[in-house]
Length: 438
Image (cartoon, helix red, strand yellow):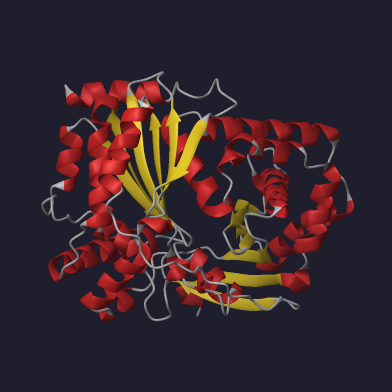
């Protein structure tokens, strides 16, 4: 019965929001610094409770990588009032679901409940913030969980270390030089006291935003928030890293060996601006032109027509402090990596010298309109967007204005961004090779 009800709720969630271009929300701060955002939509009997902490892998120190991702797991262990192993049991017994995820820049926890159980979500997140139990048994248990995740998703996954290979070459000073999941020897070497200190420093109300969205009664929700989160003490002010990389002025050449692959890969990468810069939006469009779908330029040329590549992609990996623009290709029929590199470069140079067609530009605008609507077509999607806009941009109302940024990008802007950022002397040329070739 619970599964059936939950299925209906999720189905309803996917019908919510697609109609709306304007998201009406309310935001305020508690005395302890917790930022609160409320979004009411009574279309479906669903409520989302989420907390985003402004802590990710970039807040770690050398030799202690992986802490933020580790805490994504550790803070489900239990609290003073939620027994060890009971977290998920409480969620499912109330007809809900929950999850969490971590990036280099933030950690995000959320619960989706029938709206009559929204108080349970608020109580649980307040418990996670105020009363987490961080002891040796929890650390040891989650250490094994994270190790297994790393084995499955990274170490034993073909091409699972692409980001590691790129990051360690693109960044020499900034903590973006290590991966979000980190190194297991760093977690093994950490003491219980170090984990407790990390929690005390970052998982505090003044380093977080609480979003409650969906079928809610705002006056009642405000009282619950005050009751559950108001008593949580403010932490010390969190200062985000401000580490500048030296510009890349000549091409970096590197190799990385992966024991899980048989076919090599060629990677070109470029350091680009923060996700908060307008140019980051333009580079999103550049990547769409180059490799989004079978009609995209790189796919059509290298995979479909010339049959030089098995796979090809261009990715604008935007982050809070810097972005990384990555192109990659896997050769077909023993195509030399140098040939793929030349073909990809040719398409980039074409973007730098020629305006895209009006038809291509119109298609591009439609793609971004659809993406924006899809991202905010559910209550859960809106909650996530509101948290992101506040945390990274300090402007929650970007949820209603961001599409205009894409709409105002011109064909000339696309050409200029390609000229400014995608140049050989600013790039990493990385051969990602089978271990057998070492």
